[in-house]
Image (cartoon, helix red, strand yellow):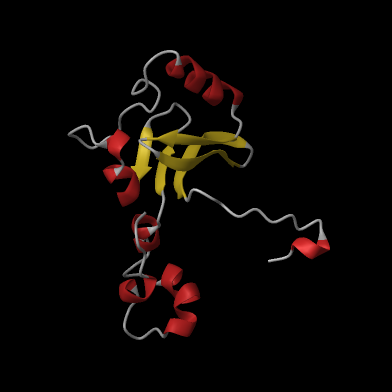
Length: 146
């Protein structure tokens, strides 16, 4: 898993206390959070064309193909039968969440359909590394608080 050090990315004038808020507003580091976020983030347009990838996505093993994938299809980079599933996912314009184990590591995959003014704009996929035992807390049961 990647390590994130927001304090080191913030302008010197910010203190640790206000860095969580000001960091995202900083003009010099406006998008630094995106590139340092500890999960792979890939954004596509409504046609499945990759529009943006953060550093974790670019270095993710399945994304290392020898060239930048921005501008390429996120649909045709898969083999069948996955291509058909991905095309259906774009056609239905729905969010999707699942977990996988690959190369002995657990991952949570969250694919969110994005809309602007009610119009489908594409999919944002986030892939997070999961530890072997992910704690689960049921907030509906008062004795299971965290």
